[in-house]
Structures are given as structure tokens and as C-alpha cells.
Image (cartoon, rainbow, N blue to C red):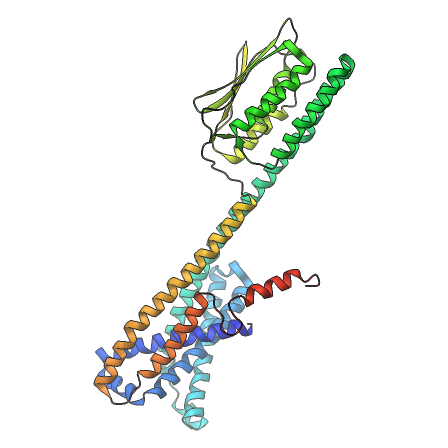
Amino acid sequence: MSVNRLLKELMRAVIMGSLLYFGFLAYYYFTDQPRFDRIVANGLREYYEQIIFFIILYIANMFWISYYIKKHNSDIYTLKRISIAILGNIVMTFLGIILARVIILVGFHGMLIEEFIANEALKYYLQPIVIALIISFAFYAIWYYKYRQENKVKEQKIIAGTASAKFDALKNQLDPHFLFNSLNVLTSLIEEDPHQAQKFTTSLSKVYRYVLEQKNKDLVSVDEELQFARTYVRLLKMRFEDSIVFDIPEASSHPEAKIIPLSLQLLLENAVKHNVVTSEKPLHIRVFEKDGMLQVSNNLQEKQVVKKSSGVGLTNIRQRYGILTDRNVQIHKTASDFSVMLPMLTKQVSKVETQKGYIEDKRYEKAKERVEQIKGFYGNLTSYCIVIPILAVININTTSFPWAIFPALGWGFGVTVHGLEAFGYNPLYGKKWEERKMREFMEDENF
């Protein structure tokens, strides 16, 4: 256990011990007036003895719990290991009670060790052990809940990371696929028309620039894709001239709509690749919107080839849509027509966790944690403002000794530290000290 962790746990022990002490004090006030009067008469001595008692029990149990969880992690939640954990808490509590009673009775009150041993009885141990066990059970339950929640987050991160890697692989798959097919077209043009081949090379560079620009995007606007499709169509027309007839709209009726980048290019490319394209049998390709889908249709005049199509293009589009949304790509084939319908996404339901999304999630988690800390501080402050006046009234009505000032100061110090921690202010090092040190370590190449 580090020094910082120890100091933090000591502060928590003081706060929890104070709350427990004054809780019992209030209970005795209503149920056991003589005992209440006896405690009040001793004033400060009773308070610091109870705080010492609680600190020792708290630290002993925290040491055991930290050690056991670090050793077994989530595997402690089996009947055997949770039994050992609870037994360990009982042993540590028992040893802590002995140590606390020795410090208080022998150290503070001057009792002889022989007298201490002779006067020990089981009744001095039962109540502290029960309280320690209740707190330990609560801690194990809270830690298990936190562990399960963290595991769920980790699972989602793994799923998102896997989907992101798969999505990137699918996008990278387009480069060789597109380039290979384009080079095949260029090879044919060089033989048929060198001048057109030169123009094709210039246009190809522009088209490929768009491919490189869009490959890192999950979605692009339908208008962008339509504009690129028209550019790609001009590229195809250089080779096939009037053998292909295109009907592509200038813009989408839904400006905010988005689709998978390069999906139109892949569909246009597939239509040309798998169909006969001649002046006698021209290929008619039509792009239009229908029922929230962008449909690409062509007349079917399949090539009679021995080699079966690899299906890279359509498979790629389907898989990328499958990662990004629950809406499916629809494919319809008849004896005369072939059409593919791409979902136009007006609201992205993305399963891929981009870097920006991850950063936003981390900021949200950090902000949520800070809000919880501030809420805890306000709860602590509210309890302080309610309990201390009650104690002051009890003090005034029972004794002239101003014992209420001690819990007010002790608890008040705890509330102050809690507030500084909640609002991220360190009075010793300054508010930006932690950030500066982290930046310093990050920039240190030898760290």
C-alpha cells in the first residue's frame, strides 16, 4: 500500500469513524441516557479513543482486502475463496481489536499487561467484529459490482476495437481491388487508343486521389458520392463511349443523408466488369432514390466467363454496412435486371469506435467521475451542516464542557479535504501540478 493510498485511507477512516461515533452517540441519547452521559462526560478522550480504535480496524481490514483482491482478482468470488476472505477479515479484526485495546488501556490508561489479559472478555470483541464484517461485506459487494461494470466496458471496448480493425481492413481492401481493375482498363486503352489512355491516366489520378481521401471515413454524404460517381463515369466513358448509358442525379433529395464511401464506384465498376458492354448491346446504368435507399440498377447481360467472380465488391459493401448499421444492403436479380439498394443513413448508428468517439467517451467518464465526487462532497457537507448543530444543541443541554467543537473541527477538516479533492485542487502542489508532472514524464524519453 503506497503512502498516498495510506493517507487517503486514514482520512476515510477518520471520517467514517467520526460518523459511526456520533451515530452511536445519538442512539445512546435516545435509548441509554446513563451511557450517553458517561460518554459525554469523558468528552474528547472518548472521541479520540474510538477514532484510534476504528482507524486500526479499518487499516487492518483494508490491508487484508487489498492483498487478497490483488492476489486473486475476480477469482475470489467462489465459495472457498470468499470464505477465506471473510475468515481473514475476522482474524484481522480480532488482531486489530487486541492492538487497539492494548494501545488505549495499556498505553493511555497505564493498565498493566497482566491486568489487561486477566480482564479480557469475549463481549469486547463481538460488536467490533460484527461491524467490521458488515463493512467488509459491503466492500466486497461494491467491488464486485464495480468489477462487473468495468468488465462490461472492457468487453465493449474489445468489440468496438475488433469492429474498427475489421472496418479498416475492409477499407484497405479497396485499394488493390480498385487499382487492379483500373490498370486492366488502362492496359486495354493503351492498345486501342493511346491518346485516350493519356487522358484516362490523368483522370485516374484524380479519381484515385478521392479514393485515398475517403478511405479513412466511415460515411460520406450522398452528394459527395454522387459527384464522385459522375467523375468515375466520365472515366469509363473514355473507354466505352456510347456503349454505356448513365442516369445519375445531380444531388440527393436528402442533403444530410450519408452512405458508405466508394460504394457507388464499386457498384458501377461491378456492373461494367460483369456485363457485356458493346455498341450493339449497350449497358444502361441508373442511380436513383427509393424508400430511403439509393438504388443502382442495370440491365442484365452477363458475360459468359469460365472464371467465377470473387464477389469482393458486394461483399465489402455488405460487411461495411453490417459494421456501421443494422440496416441491410438489398440485392435484387431478375432475368433482365440487376439492382443493389444502399441504405441512406440520416442518423448513424455506429458500432465502430473512432478515435474521436473514444476521446469523447473518456472525457464523459472523467466528467461523470468528477460530478460523482462533487455530489459526494455536497452530501458530506449537508450531513455536516445537519449533524453538527444537533450535537451543539445536545452539548449545550447536557454539559458546560464544549465537546461539540472537536467533532466540528475534525469532521470539518475532513469535509475541507473532501472538497479540495472533489474540485481537483491540491493546496500543497497547486491545481496544475499533476498535469505538469504527467506531461513532464510523457516528454521524458528515458521514462
